[in-house]
Amino acid sequence: MSAEEQYTVGVDFGTLSGRAVVVRVSDGAELGAAVHPFAHGVVDDRLPATGARLAPEWALQVPEDYREVLRTAVPAAVAAAGIDPARVIGIATDFTACTMVPTLADGTPLCELEEYADRPHAYVKLWKHHAAQRQADRINRLARERAETWLPRYGGLISSEWEFAKGLQLFEEDRQLYDRMDHWVEAADWIVWQLCGRYVRNACTAGYKGILQDGRYPSREFLEKLAPGFGRFVTDKLGHEIGQLGQAAGRLTAEAAAWTGLPEGIAVAVGNVDAHVTAPAAQAVEAGQMVAIMGTSTCHVMNGDVLREVPGMCGVVDGGIVAGKWGYEAGQSGVGDIFGWFVDTSLPPAYHQAAAAAGESLHEHLTRLAGQQPVGEHGLVALDWHSGNRSVLVDHELSGLVVGQTLATRPEDTYRALLEATAFGTRVIVETFADSGVPVRELVIAGGLAKNALLMQIYADVTRLPLSIIDSEQGPALGSAIHAAVAAGAYPDVPTAAKSMGKVRRHVFLPDEQRAQTYDALFDVYLELHDHLGRRTRVMRRLKAIRREALADRSEGAR
Image 1 (cartoon, helix red, strand yellow):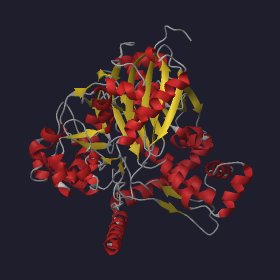
Image 2: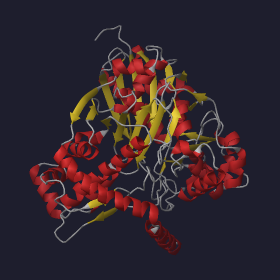
Image 3: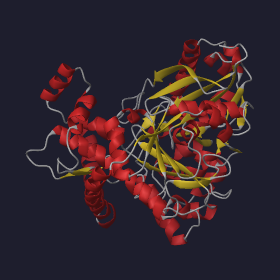
Image 4: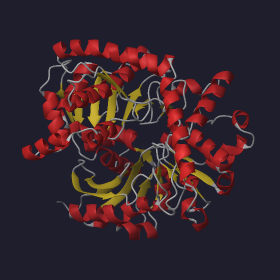
């Protein structure tokens, strides 16, 4: 290893953990990595400080868990790489989005103030916090009534996961905390603030999650009509300096250098989103290359040469992935989470015993059994809405469904149907983009689920697209390391850095026409269910409402 080599560190903050990777700037070689789980994980049942029960659809986190990743995973990754830390020239981070932190003027999260430790709204609202659906519905309704020009840039619907819906929920449900809050900060920007001491709002989340289009947010008049007093949300709580992707937000402070063991003063890149930062890591920055980052959920990102309005997309942002191109985003709220839920809740003891006897995990065991079936044998079609629908319906009141079950249905049948349902959901997204003039010619897969060969082949067959696989187990962290190299001046721009540092295996899975034809028939059934339950009836919303009432009654009774 040459003493003249330079290195960068990429840190990926996921849903349950943070992971750091040390990367050689010259060729993108990943020399050391470390993962640190969040001590509090996802807070979706009770507050850690008091044990107070949370309402349904809440998902919070504790910001100190993020700092611990910097203190633990970064030094461990550097040690594993066996490099001289003095040769590290930059650090960059990425985050799940939209994850929001209410802070004071100096960046202190409100939940770290003793007087607010018992207030749910003082904590970080994780991306999968869906309790602001009511507020999202009102934003969408008013935007349609007023024909707001920004609404089509988001496929005609704003998500309950995003900055404005969550901010409006805070405003309406805990006005005291809202007034005490100085900044409503994306976690992607908060962690950069912790590293360099400067609050810089990244262009990616501002555009995709913060409704910043053509340099403007929704108007004060619009916000005031949503709720009297909310009109100053942008000027008082949200608006801030915008940093472009690949730029330096600042320099590593002495405090952050002590946390990480990295040299004080190195470049700290502007923050980014885990999905969007992965595209350069997969060398997928050209128009038509859709990257699907598949984990607990899936985010689909793609560059385009033209601006188009795609129904139900999460957004289109000028320079949202790389400068000079329109960056498109869509997504599925539940993928790996759905498979995990099924394995955790729906397997009889015999399957646990058989998996153990075969030396397989439960997922491996079910995948092997499901892989022995010809397409369509199980007679099932499922809807992949167990965490709601992010694209193209943009409705987190929707829920999961399996149709076709009989007394002969086995766990592996349902498991395969759930795998296929997520592929059908991706096909809906791909076809919607194509119908809108943004064709997809290649699907590039990143994330842990890329290891499941059956799942990958299903996606190729269902979408009739060649599947390429990122050649890195830490795609987002590698993407962040690429941005760190650009911020440090080692490359002139992100696409140039991606050519040297990105990693991909092209066309690993190809569609089989015979299987694809059978999947066409199953997809027709999926689409019929999708449109009926997602567009024409409110039955799933009614069930959610009944559940909320029952849980509220139980909570009231417990008091």
